Amino acid sequence: MIRTTTIAIVTLPGFNELDSFVPLHILNRAAGVTAFLAGPDRQAVSMNGVAAAISANLADAGKADAVIVGSGRNTRAFADDASFLSELDFDPTSQLVASQCSGALILAKLGLLGRHPVSTDDVTRPWIEGLGHQVVAEPLTVSGSIATAGGCLSGQYLATWLLLRLTDEAETRRALAYVVPVGEGDTYASRLIERAQAADPAVVPVPQETY
Amino acid sequence: MIRTTTIAIVTLPGFNELDSFVPLHILNRAAGVTAFLAGPDRQAVSMNGVAAAISANLADAGKADAVIVGSGRNTRAFADDASFLSELDFDPTSQLVASQCSGALILAKLGLLGRHPVSTDDVTRPWIEGLGHQVVAEPLTVSGSIATAGGCLSGQYLATWLLLRLTDEAETRRALAYVVPVGEGDTYASRLIERAQAADPAVVPVPQETY
Image (cartoon, rainbow over the protein chains, first blue to last red):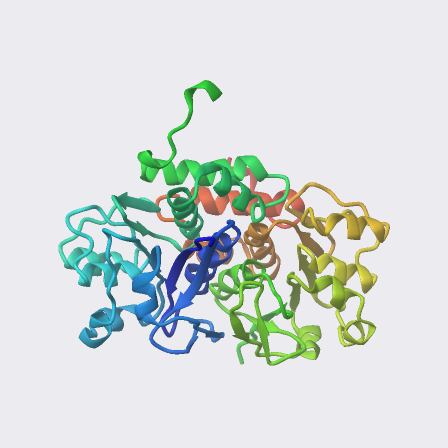
């Protein structure tokens, strides 16, 4: 039996399309990896009015090998909703737990951010700071199995980091080759990997003999 | 009355999420710009199984200020479907017409690519060449009001080019500021603008006195 690595992307009403679909697409390019949208409802309408089907529920997200909490227009309300929060059962001892932009608010409310620095977007920043966390001007911040990303397009870095942690560098590069801009292939992929590595030096032990 | 600039993103069954949603989100960040999904059906299921509502039909795409033909698993079949092609009424004399990856096949079949070089992905490349077009290893190629992009993440460059043509550099930078990775803001936005400018030098006349 082939084991599939699963990644749930929590996608709430009013969601940011980049924050859910950039990781979804990149992650699904890797062999043996399945990324899917998860949420409280069977459908969510994005911040720009696109209705998307949500294939998994919040309990499924808790069972995935990794979970990304996406962002959107209503994240702050969800972060204040005790009933919603009680449905989230993320476990950083058995899964990678990540957030994109305002998704960090959900992780904060779940008590998952500890005293580690946090990446988020500029709009969410004061809300995270208001909860006593330090926000850094970095696109991706990793502490153990918790990652936070800020700025929609840093979803590229977050997806790359997840692939490096869940597969290996060769498979990560193979997946990225499908999505990088034509004519910029290796350079672009290397930059994505460098960003992931800068946030989590443990993630890619670079063999010295190749340099 | 405020005139809204409209951009239709043709999104077919089996569509590539990056190719449709990266431009959709970035373009909608600009003031006075509305980007939406258009297609033959009211819903399309993406290549990774996400069902998305399609809000406009193909006739609407012909009336938009700009149209992007996205890519996906079934584009080649659609490019061979005379009935489908007959529903597309794109006019480069009155709108910007762009393709992402295999979307170039549709533009080729519509006779819109002329003798200009074409950007596309490596899988689509032989099919475009088989139609007598020259494919270049560039992420974005522009000829007048026709643009072709290759590699999913070059959708960033395509969206930037569209904003530069449809708004101005100040509004483009304002829109990009919302989506660039935190901590890389101006550098990242400048690189997107440089790529658009490299493909279409007419698009941003850089005032010499600023250098």
